[in-house]
Image 1 (tube, rainbow, N blue to C red):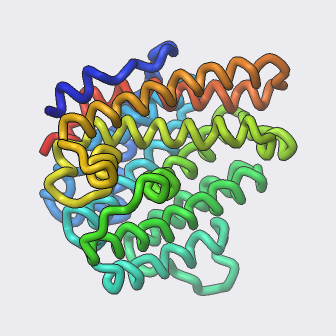
Image 2 (image 1 turned 90 degrees about the horizontal axis):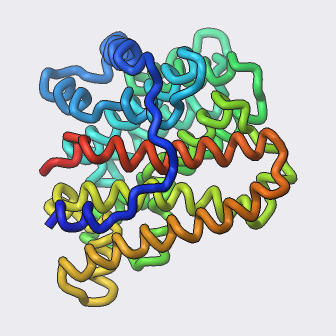
Image 3 (image 1 turned 90 degrees about the vertical axis):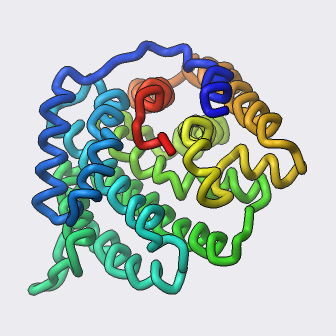
Length: 315
């Protein structure tokens, strides 16, 4: 069933590239996770290694300085490690358990990478690692990018509570609600923010609020998440209703195979719509906006290619 769904996806029609230092980045991120205690057990270490965060970062940012791809890989490593705590270790199954774990993370993000007050110490390894990420984003000297990253990360944290509440209530969200929230639970938007900083693609404010650019950015986030949903369906169907195919099946009362076909079809249609609108926007885009859109193309292609071999999605 999973193989059927994956073969129904249209590969994004963009060049497939990988950063030449992917092996070095992988070693760095593994050491970084160890140093902060994000992988306290052999099982956690094995789960994180299977995720291969460095490859995803190397595909999303194939032509950036080494420090930039390391930062993105470390963010993805953090996200995978925390996702494992929420999903595999059941932290995300109960909002009453999750909420206290999110409070110190929100405090870190609110500080924008600075201690702000003498004697501040992040509360625990997960918060300390997140503070290190925020500190490194701050050190880039691009306040607009730091604000964008922090805002997107806050949305991710709050979206996790929505997901945990659904799990506690055994609730499958409606389609429109799921699409809206999925782009936040997937933490795609903070990842995009780092990519924009890495590629000097932090578009001007007037461009970022242009309705066409807003549509492209949200659609790119949706496509990354929907690709993930199709590839991970075989694993996620055993756990809960947070998957595009599951939501379609529940809302339309369709059988599993039909819902998977529809999920793949929606991805393919979204990819075609993205290409058409992107061509229109690129016709009069300046350099920064062009680089931002190029980074979205890298994410679309990189996510698809990384997912083909992602052991993380095996049930």
